[in-house]
Image (cartoon, rainbow, N blue to C red; front, side, top):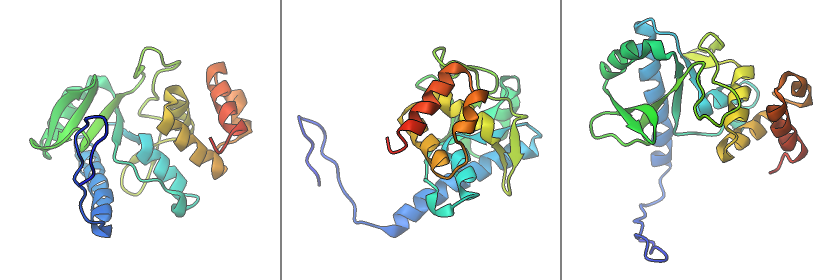
Length: 203
């Protein structure tokens, strides 16, 4: 038991466990595969985005550099939502809206941490973002599912530019997947953000 500070709730610690760590990674993969397989069967266009898409691109260069992520972000078209809902609910997911994000929790007793999050193609995730998300046609075929192509993935990461997005972009920079040659193809705001990371690769 680790006591909280400032009146916060204490945290109960379990034993260290490689198995628990492995199961956490496997659970994310299983969730992604189940969701994308359901979309494939229903003929719904989609592309895996977010941290799992970054991991897929990173693994093509150096698997040791892959960063695990709990998020399963899937890019879809809003016009397909009814079909998406039917497809995902048929394989055990439950539709929910958490913090204004449309998601599908893994089962009735599932947690928002164990969910598939939808990103809607051609729409801004937040009004403050410079650009909308990519379209589902901007994708690559992987072994298991469709992945957002590198350029729109980088664009989406520069768009959000949160701590984890900057970390993902630094991973791509460190492996040479993106570099200064990308600057001319960026809008000015994105170019400034990319230049910031190129100038300070270690954060």
